[in-house]
Image (cartoon, rainbow, N blue to C red; front, top):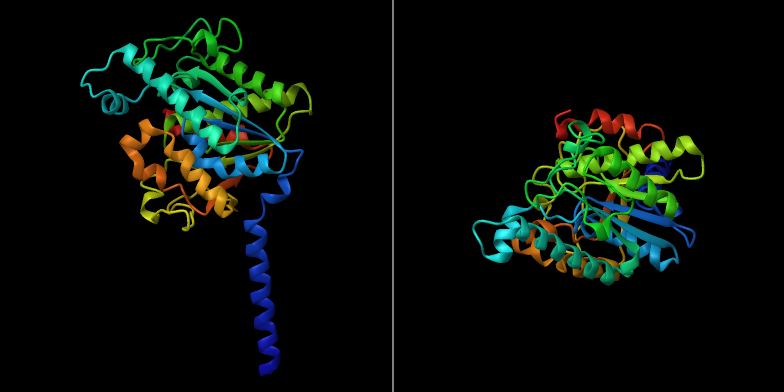
Amino acid sequence: MRSLGMILFAFIMLVGLCAQAEEKQAIEPLLSAETRLMVFAPHPDDESLGAAGLIQRVLSLGGKVKVVFMTNGDGFPEGVEKEDHIAHSTAKDFREYGLERREEALRALAILGVRERDAIFLGFPDGGLCYLVGKFPADPLAYTSPYTRENRPPAFEMIIPHTDYNGRDLRREIARVLADFRPTLVAVTSSDDHHPDHCATYYFVREALMELGKKGPAIKPTVLSFLIHFGQWPVGQGSGTGSRLDPPEGFSEEGSKWLSFSLRAKEAETKRKAIMKHHTQMLVMGRFLLSFARANELFILEEPGQGLAKATEKMSCCGK
């Protein structure tokens, strides 16, 4: 009996270890030389915090990567004041701050191996994406940023002519970049992210994917979401390239399938270097940014068909 019990115990342990290994490697089957990864970042730095390791791995396998920035991160008063050493920022200050964050993003992407031509800046309003969901859904309405005082993307970033700050025009721009690149894999901030721009980004990306799906089956990528803002997470878990990132306590989304993507030592170190390139953000929240410099990245595998319904349901961060 003792022998049988030991065998049974060993079998259970082996099954458990295999299950853990399978969970940790669950993203690996999605990655190959044929992978076309499109990362949607609400602000410059979100791409480095949430998906720098994934970006590096896809490129190392010979795959293609595009990174889409929803905003230039120009609506951050504390950051502008810290960077420019001024107490009262003007619209010009905010616009220049956005251009600086744009350049920081390009430098971070270069560290990760992404070419400048593979970075897409949509130029929509930082701090205003949620307003485009309900209050400014379509023409002739246009949201005006209280920071930059703009109501449309800069001309050099506008993909579709006559684009304004409203929900329909943002969906059109997202649909265009998706249709042009035809990704097999999309990484986007979570609908459960506490930052309004982040959950709104999920909403617009999933809506654009659904609209494209109605026109044909050609663009149906696997969707991974990643979390950036959720209470004090992940600062309380420590930091450092040797430590691991765990899902936050209190994340109650039922059925969420967390995938832990282990980074190689070089990938983890390169991710840290990319994060450091976001100088303006390091000045204000360096500890928070570096808390993402870990030995792994976390993603949630989104189930096909439920994305838009889930996003709409979770738009409480936008007051819906």
